[in-house]
Amino acid sequence: MHRLAGDYELVQSSAHHVVVVPESGWTPETPIIPSKVVEVGTDGRFILAKRQHLKHGNGGYEEPVEGEFDFWILDTRAPAVYGPFDSEECGNKRRELGVSDQLQLQGVGSLSPYRE
Image (cartoon, rainbow, N blue to C red; front, side):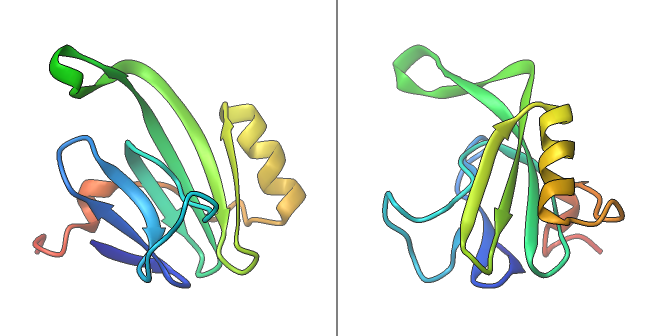
């Protein structure tokens, strides 16, 4: 897990179950960003995420859908989540919410606490 902003953190419990959730727990009504988060960025208030689509494979195991992604914005102050968006819709929502253009996404692997 990796702390992002507010009470929210990036949690990876398997190869494809990578979510942004509150550290204190959540209910179905809690704003979260569902699996599979592949890129994330934060400015201390907003969390941006790029999410790869998943499909149910054999035995109910979810598998990534190659080349299919969407984008999400989580406002940790409200809290409120917006998405899924395509790239253009996400850019429009960023401007509407006042999210800086300087905020960039980075691969979730770069957030590993084990990286040197």
